[in-house]
Length: 319
Image (cartoon, rainbow, N blue to C red; front, side, top):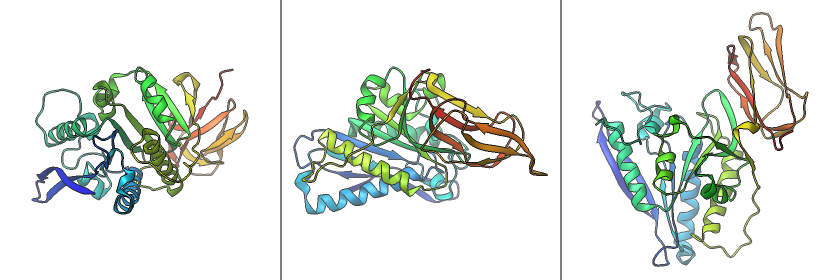
């Protein structure tokens, strides 16, 4: 493994910050494929950083003992917004800028903008396929899933089904995506999978272990690394369109108390949770599944207001 600093800068407080890239070279020349894993665009999304840690340790041991197993290259960017990751905040510190909204070709010379430009240039030079790892926000727990913008789906779904996720969610195009890393790499014809899982500032080891198995399977599938062992069986995910997503929201302010957890098949009428009056504990609203499906999003933060998202259910088949 070789480590290289792709970007460094000095903070207003005088601290030197470095963005590191860890590379595993190919025994085969030229490499069959070059795959990159990116994490930490949002500093409070820790599960991707942990996933990159697991991948680095596994690949380091493999390359030290069996370098001939590498027929392609692997590049890992474990924390591309290290200041934010160090203090567990979503946005770029001092500037309060979302780093994952800095990749559109727009004017500006901020430190976040120049760092985004450096990152995407390095990825374009190093990778044929990219996996961009994210977690959910502080309010919602998400099952391991890959989100794909419609228009890129024909190239991405065959890759996404190798990743051991529970769900592939195809979204219609929207201006909100146009400044993200995933969108701009896909637009540049570098297939990029955007993973979402877990919850911010937490590490769900079961979810990360599931994704670790999936990332290895993706590398096996692409021929980047080879194995003498039988390849582990991975889940075939549900593939859904926006019309197959049922959203459950609160009608009242109060506390949301869940009766179940994500990764469950629910039937029409099943109780998902309750909205309680925070003062007297009165049940204000019982949240039930309106249709049969797979529960893939669930509210974790109990404090809620009217209109807050409480759960999402994926309909496996349209009625």
